[in-house]
Image 1 (cartoon, rainbow, N blue to C red):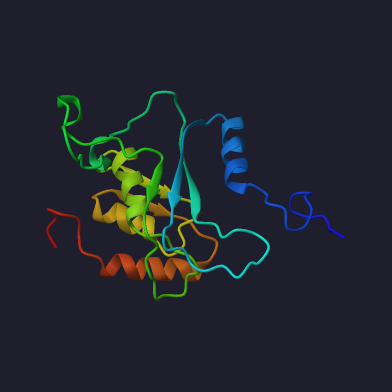
Image 2: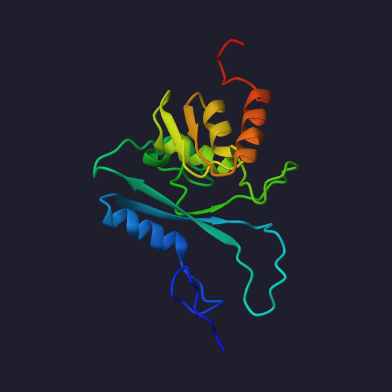
Length: 181
């Protein structure tokens, strides 16, 4: 007999759709949902579940507070192959499915994402010398990518141990290109 989940009034083992629920709640709070991007993980960790398929993706959302916002597609364009039209000389739009392998991480954090993921988001969505806010900063991968791209970063996490990991990673990281040490 299925028992109801206290968190969402759904039967046990029912997907809750948290990423989409969060995106819709942000829309209800006045945010603009501009993109839903799939992070395809070709080398995802094995899953022991026998009664469902293994998830090979996560969702990323581009949200803005205004209908007009700063966005720079050029740094994340993909190289072209074959015949190039003059309008496409800088590369093609990467689309809304990003295949980025999961990378190993030795510190005590369950599931940090690869730095390429926040790097793309920051390059496209944060002005040079701007500030990146990560409200679920974990091991600081987003802050580290921001630092390496010459942006400032604010990280928030409920687990203080993760902040210690993030600060250690950032203090050991090279300075952004062109900055004196």
